[in-house]
Amino acid sequence: MNISRTLATARRVLRQLGHDPRTIALLLIVPCVLLTLLYWVFDASPRTFDSVGASLLGIFPLITMFLVTSIATLRERTSGTLERLLSMPLGKADLILGYALAFGALAVVQAALATGLAIWGLGLDVAGSPWLLLVVALLDALLGTALGLFVSAFAASEFQAVQFMPAIIFPQLLLCGLFAPRDTMQPVLEAVSNVLPMSYAVDGMNEVLRNSSVTGDFFRDAGIVAGCALLVLALGAATLRRRTA
Image (cartoon, rainbow, N blue to C red; front, side, top):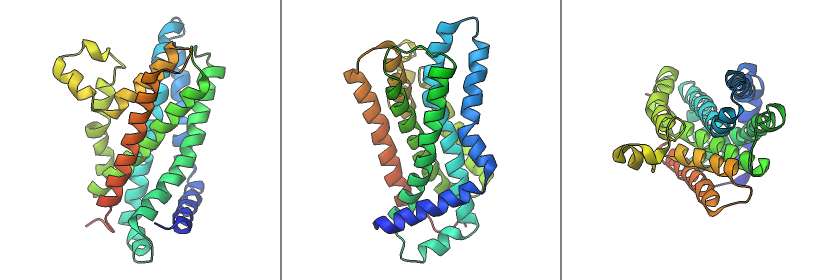
């Protein structure tokens, strides 16, 4: 791995994204709009918004980063850009980490905007520090980036990349504890939810929601999300293909 090549890749991706305002809007504005819509939906029940809003602060960044990263990476492959880049002295790890840094930088802005809006704009009431919410939101966005880079290796078109969302994201969304506590699910479903990273993202947000101090469970949840992101990035580097057949 070469640091200068990794940073050059990140700068190139950021320049390209800078010329795509619709993608920037999807990344930065849509999560804030959805949080505001949720606030209006539960206007008569602030406690429900506090509970659901904290969970969605972890879910929205993961979903949007997954979509944008998987499609953007696949577009580079189908256009032949990846093949040209990998024909130069650029390793797969340099490429994957460059993409992760570029989208990670956007993830920082996205997580900061969404968390700031929820806490100071919409009055999300949390017992813990808002900075801890930001940490979990950022880890979730990085996990979404890693998943997007990984699944892009198995899609032949942008339409197929979007089709991975029901297979990868929706099961996690249903089993993460957002709709029902995980310990009340059928044993098989609870066992499945225990190995899904989004479950720990939601648990981490709920820890901040309920506890004024940092707990061991919070460190466990944040560590699992971060570990899953690193693992999926490594798998993404291992499965990266030069082009789509």
